Image (cartoon, rainbow, N blue to C red; front, side, top):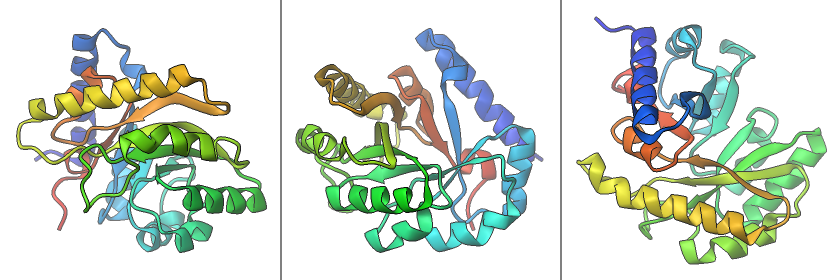
Length: 229
């Protein structure tokens, strides 16, 4: 029976193969363990196997785990973030993947300055214009980046996307490629204090394709921790 540690090592091997196909260095790729509904002991098993980044979707669940996980991990908030939850997120998380509006970024900035932190922020893009998903429309991305670029307490370091769900990972290749193109376009604009260093896209079933198309942060839940209850 595969353990959490075995699963994590298997994911690492998939990352290496995807990077080999793309001519990239596997060390460039950050694996975020998506720990929604995962018990702390299973997260700790993954950390013991080498996981360094842990992602959470829900604020309350994440706060309940804080004292039960190693202090060495980097914490990523990867779910939709309500403005009224920012005051709880900023003291705990190092990254926020779901910045998608000016008001949210301003609240993150305010709270980060108050506690003397700098949050790494990724702007979420809604590629498929799906009403059920958060994210800024691609054509409004540059406007949003410009509006939040000068905010203290936030380092805007890239983009994040969750493409429309598809059974065949190859069908998502076009979306991942579009995100890489968007990232390059924003980089060429040279918006002050905005970096396109990171591109967060790809999950358990499709991260191989995402890496081939330029992802350097992948969010893997089931592949590491197994099916959620």
